[in-house]
Image 1 (cartoon, rainbow, N blue to C red):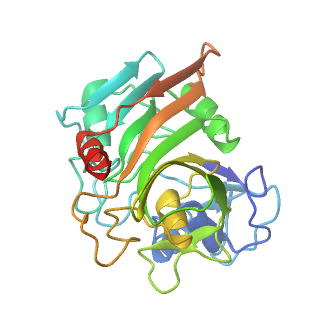
Image 2 (image 1 turned 180 degrees about the horizontal axis):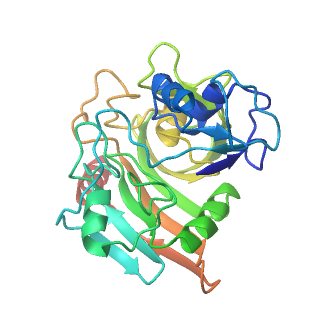
Length: 304
């Protein structure tokens, strides 16, 4: 995948190559990225460089996402049922259930959405994101439910990736969070990056990537609020991190939530319920909704 440093959506300024790539791919370890740079698998303007290379505006970084992390295996097709909301020759809209990982990772090599898509689509998936993430334009967490957009070809992938970078794709989430709000709506504008004290977690950090989440309160309960979130950016764990940052962690969030949470074990209460975009081939605006999952609705009814 080619990344143009300093292009729209890049707020990093002058930065070491390895640091920049870790911001772009927070799920990758620094050592893995440095090994790829050292081996020449990652190049800048077609040239082999060192990890400490200082990027300049307009530099083209070629990142071979088809190279898996050490110890990982390439995905294979698996006959796993998936809920397909819409499908045509270019795209698939999937309603992802709780507990399903989007793409292979250690501990989930053959039970992911990618494995299911490879079985369903055969070779008809975009290759832009490499062999580990064929067709995947954006992700949602394992225990987040809802709508996910998948591309069958590179034309569709490029078009929708551009819409994503321009913030023109409509993404709406519903969540249950702790605490009450004085205001009916608000915005969290705080950079997100990997935490220095725990590299497995994301957090609001000074040198993180720009992240903006808008929220609106839908209902208020005792010490719990039902909210809708609108994303401008799509950072890893963005809603979970931002809500925790402002003192309103999600119910059931065992990473960023309360230590003593009676809803722990259910997964975080976060559902991607609406997705809207311009179709890459027809130019038609399309919008899809997903009903709230049963466990979410049951909790809402008890709160009411």
